[in-house]
Amino acid sequence: METIQIQTSSKSYNVFVGEGVKNEISSFLNNHFTKLTKILIITDETVASIHLDNLLMLLTEWDPVVFTAPSGEKAKTFEVYYDALSTALENQLDRKSVILAFGGGAVGDLSGFVAASFMRGIPFIQVPTTILAHDSAVGGKVAINHPLGKNMIGAFHQPEAVFYDLELLHTLPEQEIRSGFAEVIKHALIYDSAFYDWLKTDIHHLDSLTTEQLFKSLTRGIQIKNEFVSKDEKETGIRAYLNFGHTLGHAIESEMGYGNFTHGEAVMIGMIFALKISKEVSGLAFDTEEFITWVQRLGYQTEIPGHLTNEHLLAKMKLDKKSAGGTVKYVVLEQIGKPKLCELSDDFLITQLENFK
Image (cartoon, rainbow, N blue to C red; front, top):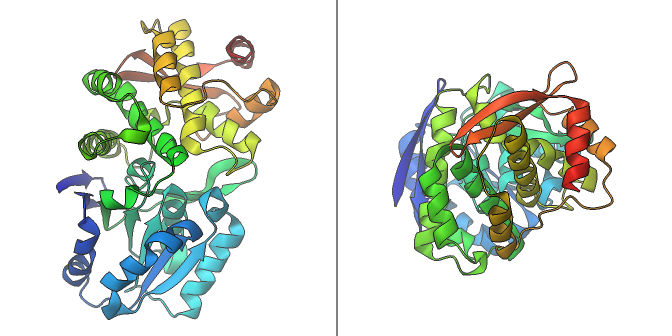
């Protein structure tokens, strides 16, 4: 097991990574909370059907309440958020209660936002079940979606701890592995060229990742995320670099309809687009074709779905949280490990989208 300390301006907490770490949740609850009244587990239909019974067995002394959301991005709607709050109220949770987010990134986002807003804020713990959640479970950004934009309704609310049990990842379908591993690749590109070189050299197939490869990939990804979060908790500066590939990625997700295209696979297309832009605007020396060949071998789609229009994608990109005054601000790379933020004109982006397609 590895323990990674996350240090932000508002809170310090640990991420526990390893096989079987979920077995430590009970002792953490007893040691961390003096008068714990209730536990609300927020999960989704897929995770509940596979893993929930095992978690409940570990928490029998508290007799947890369970709220089960739809799987994927369908968990992050106003209606589901309202129903989760209603469950908390009906079961008389209070400020000495805790929410356990038991699922992937969508469940973590929903649970964190419920915790942030219920009684103006109660504690929550992340228990991720996907590779993608190595990114979303750390850093305290919690939100639900609006039809006009992804993660537009939310808050900053740090967890009390993250229990990242690698045993829970063994049941992931290949599409979810791809979705999550895109964020691992992103972390390498924006911060650590040596880590990127290791990924490109060692990772050839995502359907046969070894435990050692997975452990190294996830722990290094979390460490890199902490480098940004610890210096900029509320995303007023360098934390925006973590959105590399996300401006177009989120636009693709929105245009495709949330849940119809996985987050990481959309971000991968966004990263390829951002790498090509980086060569234009910041002189990045990088073999994008070699990168595309590698990620295609890993199973990624590398082109924007053909039926999406450039104009609609641009309109969604202008709703990105980094944008200001209708101008798109884009994360580009000067070199591997050295990102920067730049303003790009509508005409430039339309031209680049046309060339990309």
